[in-house]
Image 1 (cartoon, rainbow, N blue to C red):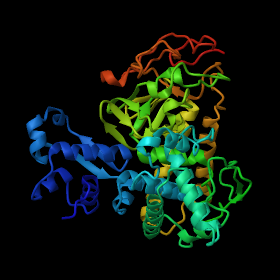
Image 2 (image 1 turned 180 degrees about the vertical axis):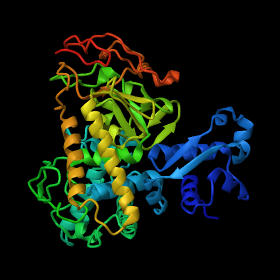
Image 3 (image 1 turned 90 degrees about the vertical axis):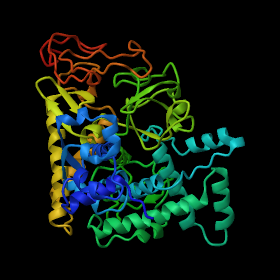
Image 4 (image 1 turned 120 degrees about the vertical axis):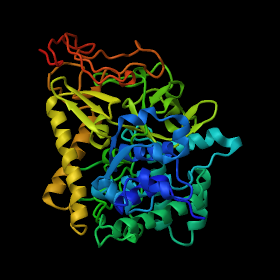
Length: 509
């Protein structure tokens, strides 16, 4: 008996125009429950794969009805352009979205590696008697200031070093050298080989649906002796530049392979990772995040001691995560893939992502320019000026247009056109600028940035005064109370900044 994920089945029902999934699946021998259908649609809606019109009577469904049959669910759903492409990929929707965006933004090699690692076991082994040593070795793969202590980019770095050894060393010494590398870093050869095999399969799937150029070959990367070195220490070039990039060892990294020109841009890679994992987002307490006007910062406690907020409630970082012993975070927001529940709810892997990555690749975006507020799915709120907000909305529309163009003409190279290259360059520059905290505030108030968290209550560690940034009034009510209204009034700017007055937080410098 072959089992298939319910999300994949819902996408297939919508693709074949068989009617509403909640109605069509009642014909199954063992129809899924209304709760299972609802969760699947919610997940796909969060990914941007479907658009759902939820009727009001869904909130009145009893527990017994929700667990009995999907007839109790009343909803209308339609495929988006992204959902159309995801329905043609026989992979998990999150993995599929990451692959598609990796191909669109020409960073396909790291996207394939991370997607394959999520579809297989963790390549890092953790022997019971050497767990601390193994965790320390794992952290050595994430030493760059760009990745911010990412578990996913650490896996990417480990695989690239493994591939570099495999392709560069001669047959005579490959056995002993490779064995020493795997043993010293507590890596599983079998898992790394499985990741490599999955990468080839995923590349073939993208090639079949037209998201990779016809001249793309997976073996081109493997055969390039200078490719595969660690990418966490690369000096990033200008966005859209197809020239070779030097890594930290002085070697040349091949970025001239079709579909792989931006593989060294880790800001863009993290944004693609965020696109695939959303809405799996964690919100960190403010007192462990360095603000843009702080030259030096040391947190009062380790990140692993703090409580993070998420859609699933309060969660903690697992001790095996790279950020567990860190003293600070580059951003309040992290994306994760695996979550487990033992004595507490733990996240086993995470990557810090910027606010602009969430605004560009997150869920449904609502912008209230009059109040300087942007909300993603009514639960992530940001203070943002009107001009950056307008830019974000325009870039999201253009990304949707590229996906739609791929449906109409699958063989068109939408990212190779002048318009597509300009879009990729704009997003790359935007992400790099935000990560370097070089945004110049539109209102010129010291201590502010173009994008910063809105007025969100209930910090994860329940310490609302520690390191708290005061925001201009024109407050956006906490989504946890179910209110979407915006209140306007007078207020002060952030600490250390000048006072401002006005309904929308706009004031005098």
